[in-house]
Amino acid sequence: MWGTHQQRQIHPDTRLADVTRSVWRQYQRDHVFREACSWLKEMTQEDSWIYCVGGCEIGAISSEERAATCVFVNGCFAPSLSVLPAEIIVAPLREARAFFQKHDEEDVVEELHSLLRGEEGTVIYIPEGRELQTPLFVQHHYVCSEEENKKTVSVPYIVFVLGKGAAISIEMGMSALPDNVYLFGKTLCFLGEEAELVLTMKPLPKGTERIIWAHHVEVERRGACALIQDMRSMGKGWFRNSFFLKGETAHGESLVKVLGGDFLGVHNTMHHDDRETTSHQNIRSILEEGSFSFEGGIHISPRGTLSNAYQKHDTLLLSNRASASTFPRLEILTDDVKASHGATVGSLNAYLLTYLRSRGFSLIEAKQALQKSFLTLDIEKPYFPKLQKQDLYHV
Image (tube, rainbow, N blue to C red; front, side, top):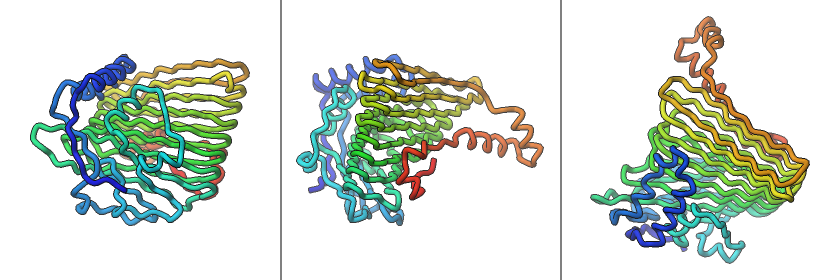
């Protein structure tokens, strides 16, 4: 059964404080994390925080007319607002535990998330061999009532499970956050053999702040997953992406596009745990002011012989009020592998600006054209034959 709207007080007990301190110690060297996630420490020091799940105002929300739409209100699945194909199975996390092995991740971010949410969460299952012909749109809405002197934490937890040979493109979007809502979300993706998933995080509303979101991806033999994150004019946010390539020739991709923002951070790790696994990290950022931080890790275990990992961060800084930082990390525990990383920092090409102006573009139009071209990314098509055939991916 799906839960109804509920709120409960968050009591800053010893365990919550200890786990929060562990998270802080692990990531505090990142100045963007310190700036964007300072509210985590506040949560353990004040009694003015509440946990909110589900919605009592969902009647005021209307979902767009799409072939496949999955709507969440305050992190809770809303069946009455969702339109799903018959082949997609959705179940509460506490009921779905019986159908797949419980996910145990020894990680302080997961521990803190679990401590806050309890058993709340949603599992979305795409059965073996199913290839959806249209994208699935996942929409998040937040409608918590604004109680005086109360700060609301929403902790959405979504698990996508793809059976062997399944293929789907998923696009996740979000409405504007109320002023008193703080978001700490997590997405898990489990891909069976030969499964394909392209998961796109659509641009958040302009000025969005107070958001932490983590992705955990596991890919089995000959499976492929691409995670695309589009960040435009955000305020403050921190995102962590962990890929575990667990089967032979499994493939993982992280494509990140940043345009503007105050304090944004992305923390990636690619774990290569079998032969001939491949990964691709392509990060591009354009900043006129504010700060963006990228930390990208590549870990190739002793089982990862003949693996190939690539990481690149390219940045355009448009003024002296902007800054960007890159921290690559490589840990290679076997021979016969390829692993590379690189970073570039520059500005808009003056020659191309002049050329476009000579062709009738205004200065603003010329800058926008160059920025759009710079942020155009594409997934590695050969790894997604099913989705390539259906033309379900666009970056």
